[in-house]
Length: 80
Image (cartoon, rainbow, N blue to C red):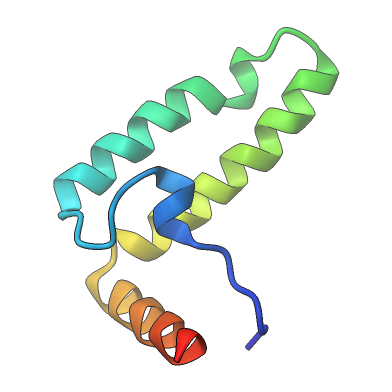
């Protein structure tokens, strides 16, 4: 595991104790804003794609209870 791992909660703009609905709403809101198809030009599309991939990764981890539990455990070990 890497010494540094993205903070998925910060990526989605939710607290660590956010429930599944709050995570889903935050993801959908950001996905609508950052989807590459919404970009005006190629440069903006590239930047949007990078951001979109990060929020997708965060959502994939936080929406699954088992993955979220494992992620939280790893983060707490790294911060200890």
